[in-house]
Length: 311
Figure 1 (tube, rainbow, N blue to C red):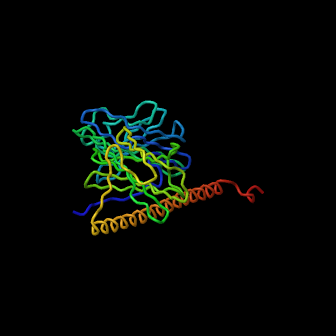
Figure 2 (tube, rainbow, N blue to C red):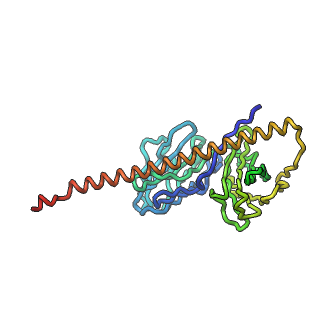
Figure 3 (cartoon, rainbow, N blue to C red):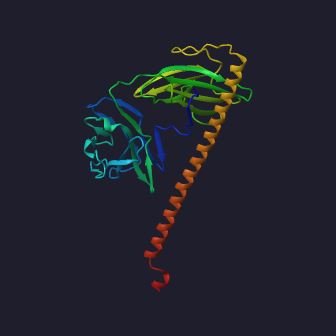
């Protein structure tokens, strides 16, 4: 059976969204709880006053965003009258954290907090809530070197599998414990195999600009973190799963090389597409801000007396 994969790339660290001085952070990206338990979904907001409102939204699978409520830090809370479950939610006093006192199966969804800044609504990265009978299961981790081609690039892979729920967040750090981000030296790509509950993060290193000889892959699942240290040289595997080299048949080797080239092509295509998307997003934000400024200037001109009228 042909493996179905979803390929995507990180252009920003998805735990924090910052636009025009407004920062919204949802540190927990997934929670798994059982029915009748309670939960607090955290939302940290910087850059707004105590009277500015933070909005909470719910998005169930296959449905659009629905606003649950909006609240400010001064304590003013307004439920959205159109949400059918609005009475199930409240907000922790003195914060923006969403609280559900008694969970139901229908509360399974993604929850976003958001606020306005400069005519733009900025959303957090979202927290996925599963209301299930089963408890969460941590991932099995492995790490290895995928490829070291002659183009000056080497690829390190960090893989998490057999977890529930199948959502994880990867963070890479170099030997000085500095987080690795997109740059001239590094690219970050991620591949998800829906059939086998397996997610792989790839760190692509430009060997012409080496800055570290070893790296640490940190994997967050629910509220727990696991780490694996990886050498920049060809790897022997990890403590959780040793990756042994093998001598494949010639046909298998050709097929594997062809599949890897195809996947790398998809990585590059996705990478370029998301770059274009982000450029268009910032252009649109800039245009809206410019348009708003022009309209404000026109309004000011209409309300101000002219010099001829003064004479």
